[in-house]
Image (cartoon, rainbow, N blue to C red; front, side):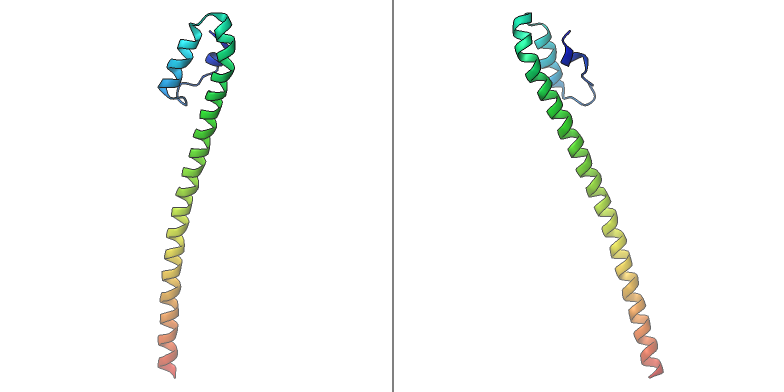
Amino acid sequence: MSEPARTINTEEIPREVLDLAEAVGTLPEEYRRTIEPLLGRLIDSNRRRRRILSLVQDALSQLRLDMKYLAFDLEATRRERDEFRRKLEETA
């Protein structure tokens, strides 16, 4: 089979693109040489998009966790402030 089709990791690529790669592999050599570079760029682009999506999802997960920590810290700071005010008013 052609070079781009040999390097395809089937877990990363949609089934439709894999089907296209198989169809391109059955074409005569003259057509395959024209289409394979385009198919390779399509596969690379798809991998890049998946990596970017994964990075964005990880960043969002981290942001959610950070927000939970900040909310907890804010609530703890408010409780400390209120406790300090209460003690200050008792001594005054």
